[in-house]
Image (cartoon, rainbow, N blue to C red; front, side, top):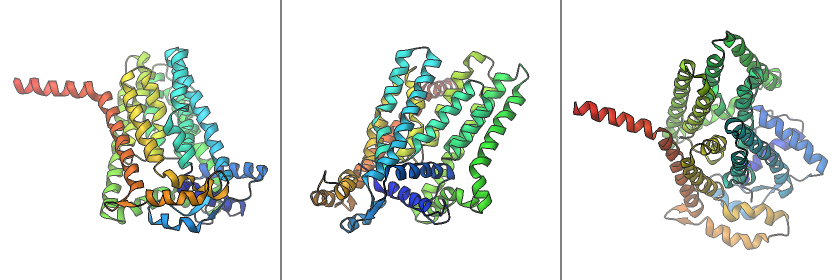
Length: 413
């Protein structure tokens, strides 16, 4: 299955790269350069494998373009697999990093193996990489590596990896205050906090320059951040719903930044250094969860999953929201149903495209004015959102109850 909306964008980028146009000379690429560089590597591998046809426009599928985010331009199964192999490699590495973190924190090999399995066999992990073809697994990989380098005292590497993750998708940048606080708290008494913080900053700065230097030199630096500026302008001005959504997203990100700063202050003031690593992981977990209050797009959730799995190992109550995310996010991701099988029907003999067309027609037929495909996706998003709220309830339930008890006692007095 392949949700072609994003995949056909990767096909355009690869085609632009193959034509010698770079990432930004021809419109079609709207992210920072990191994923573009990875696509360039994928393009090189596809040349070696002899994959010469990227995709085609299918006239039979033109009616689906009436549904938002569905297109009639389909990439070939060979091209799709060439991209998906990159995600498979990333998923394996992320699984190992989860294994390493759990074993390092708990010393329990069985829990570490379970952590790997919960990630690698997780339906939403599979569906994000292998159905919609988004690269959030790679962001999770870089973020986890940054956390591990931080824990091991490799601060230049930690800064470089956090910068790399943030320049792939900007969410990990919200963790920077907590990382700074961790370094300061860990090394303040021995007098090396400033030196290690500088190492972290230098690592981040050097990596940022390396990634962005080609765009600085060819005059396309501003294009590296189109994904932020274009989405804000489109969201704020397209409709009332879009305008409200744009403001809610800004509020959610501001809240995440505020919480990151508050957690950083708590880490700096922490007296018991034995709790430092645990408190740091808790802070990262909460910040990443807050980030996806809005917009909770299925692919974004992938960054949360490794830290949620980590928390499951110490509190099995977190299995409930993990299961909800497995169901809801997977449902939202796979909402395309038979439409996601079109590439197989069009470019191979495994499925007859003509046999898919009646299913697609039924699937895209409006019910009370809403296509069935959108209803299924909406149900998935609701379940996913409940999962996020359950995470926050489990994490802050005791704090909320203590606050309410104090208010009750104060009222009684």
